[in-house]
Length: 174
Image (cartoon, rainbow, N blue to C red; front, side, top):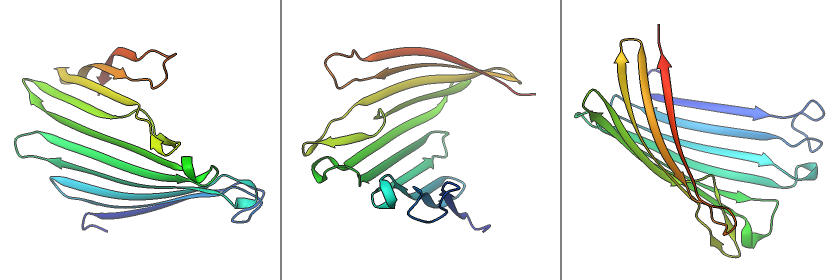
């Protein structure tokens, strides 16, 4: 709209039943505002998961960022959901993240923490599986940037170990 406000709508179905009970439909709505230094977004999604469109999974998410004048920025997101296809004692989901980055030397240093996927309620409690990452992105020359990254992904089961990884991303621009 030219004022920083945007909105979006998406719809998915199959050929067998556009908007009818014969197919599982999904739709999403998004409204956002962005300015020079901050932005916020509110999203809603609904997915039919049962036969004849009688069960739905619904999600609401809120995301935001803020960029300070000194080159540092923070961003965060929070999502809650209700699973219509399971019992009410295990039907809630939760996901969140928080990140920060800023200019350090010739590049950008950043770190983030958040859930590793969505956490689903189990017998009245939500089990957290967390993920952590840190990166440093720096320009090698005018057309190439290298970003080394380290991450840790926790596992909530005793049989699977936590996962640690190191990656290097190289970006080229011409």
